[in-house]
Amino acid sequence: MTAAPNEAALERLIGFYESISEAALAQLACIYAADAAFKDPFNEVRGIAPITAIFRHMYQQVNDPRFVIRTRVLQGDDAFISWEFGFTMKRFSTAPQTIRGATHVRFDGQGRVCLHRDYWDAAEELYEKLPLLGGLMRALKRRAAS
Image (cartoon, rainbow, N blue to C red; front, side):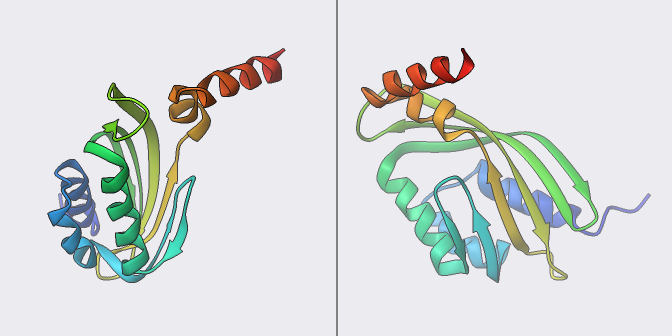
């Protein structure tokens, strides 16, 4: 049985995220296509430099970021990954935090990510855990559910 054409690309991407470090950001050009599109709940950018800037900003905001990949599905050029992102905030709280989410990626002909789209609930996974704002978000959530 032969491996799927993008299996090595998916393993390279997962390896990058599971061992992410500020120094490893120099590897992004080997993982992402030069004109890759990246979207998460806070950003929508295109290109290696803006994607790198998002990760650099992450290191300014949090301590000890780490990803644990829980599920991976590869079909042709598309992959779906579910993950847990652990960290501690540099401001607000020193308590460990975890965000659960998923990512859809698409690989180009060279096995580089040309599309990266993160899906996670910023209200539940982040805002509700912040002082002051968390209470407001939980109240809004209860109100919307009633």
